Length: 544
Image (tube, rainbow, N blue to C red; front, side, top):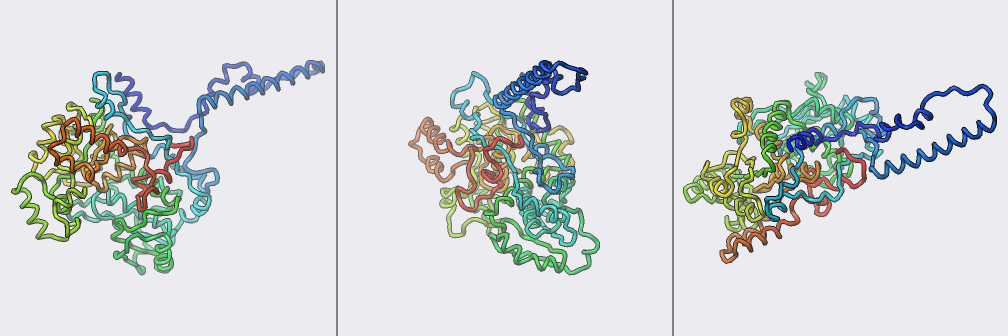
């Protein structure tokens, strides 16, 4: 069993640098040496022998061709696809294949054995991906423009990304798209100091900057710093950017100005770019999110080590529990821990009303029933139990420090005692380099969560949406999105038995477990959360 798992781990990312399988068998057939080796011709062969030899060669060649075609069809072999299509102007550039650049999870455990109930087996069952695979095939017009845009040396774009880790990831993806629209070189994005967590990390502290440049070199030029020729010239700084800006608006508003000044600085990009971009730009966002934004080596290595420590014990759940103090302040919700804790949150909210992101004219009860509040530990425990999660399963808590400490988690631990955090998994000193670096710690949580067999967020948010799309992109790993608006009334109904409650919860969530969802099914869906159909398709050539 251990050998099988290790083999799966080594093969979780399949590269396409392989020759067709049948070529390895050719040398064992006599016809192979006949067709591929030079042969001496007799000086004066009889005419009937020449005719017989030609006929035999033709017949054998024809039969071999039929045999090879049959072999290919029966084994569904597909030729390798490179990052750059044959017509790409960058064929001579040595760039990483997309199949090698994507961050992929450890393999799902699959069937967990015979000694579990059917409900538990269903809980661990992975969704049907319906044949969708990653495919970033850019249009011919996009590829032709790449030769010019990727060598740009006059126009430079600087973007300041604010917020937490996954907000910054979204803004960086948007920055790449905007640089492409403006045909500008992108300076490695600046990460703004996070005022809530006091994180002063720079781009290279969180992400692999060289990998970022290499992966995008066919799309835009990425530079580490502003050239000296542009430092003392005229600079345009724009921070008041309207919502839902389109490529046409961006080009009309900034292109001539950038061509004149040479340098443009954009701030406040969070959720400003329209979600309804042209297909090639949607693919570019996927390329940034799932391929270019690889975490820096120290983060990547520790995250993988912690993921393996969880994985080796069997299937596990990752929860993104949003129980931090700032979450309760911003959402306008109550903690469920009692008046003592709720009074603290209320006082902070009243003293800093600008932090409140919830609708002002809604009461707490209205917000909760509308699905606008995070699930607390008790609600999450009831949901997992109803969906069939085994009591003994290991659960990784990817959330931050909960407001209320251990008391906030107690209802969940009572039902699922094997709750662990990165602090519990890490060995002495492993987390020390990331002390007081919230983005690095969030990145470690992201890596461990990506490899989980099941991921469940307690609330919406950037990390939940990022993992939703990433888990879809790497094979539609199970992702349970709590239907809070539909399920919470049943939490309050004491007349519903445990068996009925479990049946209701499974029915409510049967279609929200990571199955392919089309981005264009609803307006304004982000391709990073819904990569189908722009970045994933059903044709046979894929990265994985």
